Image (cartoon, rainbow, N blue to C red; front, side):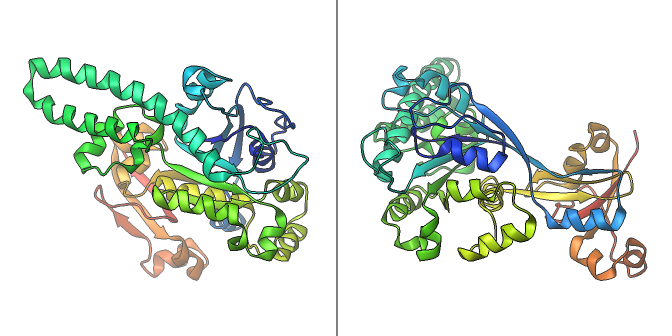
Length: 364
């Protein structure tokens, strides 16, 4: 999973990226500090995997990973090449989902590119640039569909749909806001529209906001309202606070989080939110050679899940021997679980569940 972190210059995007990935990306108080996108790969925290590692003492421990891409700050006119616009737009096309960082704190020492803090305006600035870029793309698809329609009238329905999408974009709205049938969603997925990518808004607040009550932050409420209007997710995070967590021992981190009323770090909360956003789950494989988490889409059937490990597993799939993580924990050992009949033999139609511990049987 690749997540693109976007935002106006000086909203705390690179600071948050550094805190989440500990990658040491350059962060400074001037626009366009980030030019080439910084990339950081982080392990997905999964307590289930830790428990299995304790149980099996494996030779290799492999958690699922997420790739964060810190993309250059965007300004008005990016769709026309202003600032680093063209670079920004090409980088963002490569990600699975967008993490839009929005400044929700006051600090006279940190320059705002537009002179004042206004989350609604900031979000609109970036969304408008993405929309303008998408209008050009949808116009090219409309022209292509018109040519195809000359040879086959069945494309008339697609043409009507793409023109509807263009109309929504011209109103300044995202492609995500278009009501689509399942078939129309398929058509839309074939067009590389930036505003059709899943998005989560990260409200970068001050650390005192968590202690005082995040709902009291009027800037956060602005971001929340925008997110609700387009059925997107929103998550409050303090980039400076996350930076302070770096290097702390586990117990100290826990105390630090508890002091502001949080149970999880911003990284953990963001990963969970992104899994939900993209409809992802993890299944686990466990044994002495390796304990590992595998990321798949909700609704994935056993053979396709096996194919994540190796294409031969899917091609020669026979069955999956499955036990739920909680069932294994109750039994303490796999041997006891088998005696109690809790290890199931599942076939090709089995839909994988989050936390399934699986051994795939195959023959090629």
